[in-house]
Image 1 (cartoon, rainbow, N blue to C red):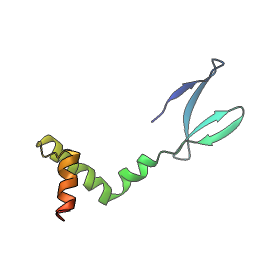
Image 2 (image 1 turned 135 degrees about the vertical axis):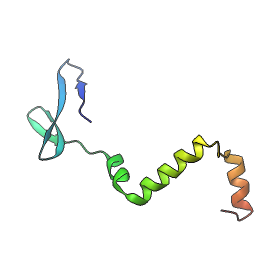
Image 3 (image 1 turned 180 degrees about the vertical axis):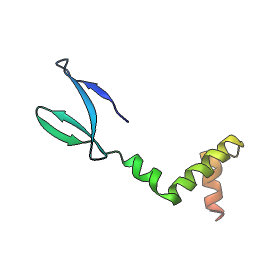
Image 4 (image 1 turned 90 degrees about the vertical axis):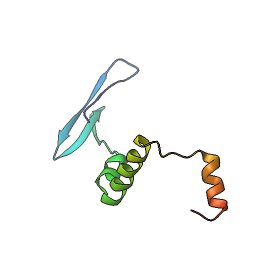
Length: 77
């Protein structure tokens, strides 16, 4: 996920790869770019939940908040 940022003073800050990690450099200091989304994507259980949810959405299997609250009250969830 390489990117560029434009600082308020017009300076462009580009990301770069080093040792299989993404970094940016600001005022001479190097910062690792951390994305918690990457951790979710690498967890097989969470990945499966995301895929199941995406499939349900495509199939139109969706519920309103009110329907979910009622299901919880009935002890169905």
